[in-house]
Length: 436
Image 1 (cartoon, rainbow, N blue to C red):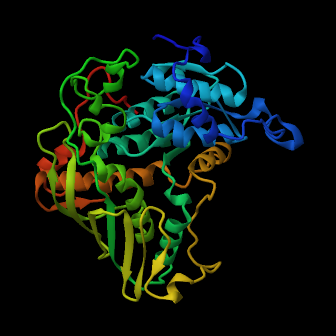
Image 2 (tube, rainbow, N blue to C red):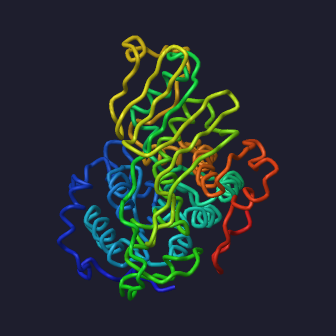
Image 3 (cartoon, rainbow, N blue to C red):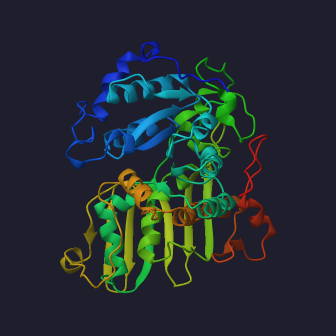
């Protein structure tokens, strides 16, 4: 394993980007509380965190909250792209005013360190479960970006979390977003009467089909490690980094990327967050003549055992819950809550009513608090798995082109061998999932 730990920040080639990343983690002055003064956490008692995956989301969304948090200290980072890795190293060292951040292109070096308590995994989807399970087996608590790659992966991940008694946070912010929390509580407390229908709209996807023309692998990228368990395919710029989302070998398209967000609030409000639908049908189109091969446009319908029907189409991301006595919803990501009447919109949730757990400080703070308390965070592994399953069910139904019957208890398709074969995917050696 080749380590990059001794490379200093002076070797970083993209100094011009530093200002933007420093701004994201401001202020740079370390407060006295971080130094252990005033009864706060001392440096020696902070949770040591390793970052695995330092791409756009890993740095722009996940790194800042960890660097600002008085309970945590980021001491190591890993990425297969050295440009992105050195960018993260530079940001981390600037925050702590030292050059101590260990860096590597091989995540196994992060997991092997006994001084690391927890890891933040921000890799492409096809790496999520494998790295998470290996981290759990190495004794680390885990915060990992959503979603899983397959339904069977999620089932195995639950087993690993529970066996090793570790904290696992499925990493999305939705349960900390007031608008989504508010909608879920209004529905759960009967403000719209009996819930009948949920309308989910996910964003539209890029119109480009991606360039499949093979290109030389950039010198900064360990492309073999980037592919990992996925089938070998020639490098092209449109295959890696952000664009992996539109390629089936690495992800499940927009339905998995954005569906994990809005389906979570839907499941939360429907009180099916540890279960799921019983019937799925859908149609969809795909890109033609290019690299991308996930579903492009789609129209999916789910039915739940409680009679609720949920639909999913592309457009402006939004949610709408329709009940016997009215509706509540929003339009646009984090759009203001709207309702069919002021009485619903302004309703107060009483102390003796259903109060759904949230943490306004976000998923990173929630995870770190749970590392201390050893309790499940607000988006634990089993709920994260069920939301990913809702996404995967849509893709499977579209691929097969027919209505499917799903048993949420057995997590199998009823009498459908072809559909059950799609619960998992083959992996390229040596990157098989370990036995839990």
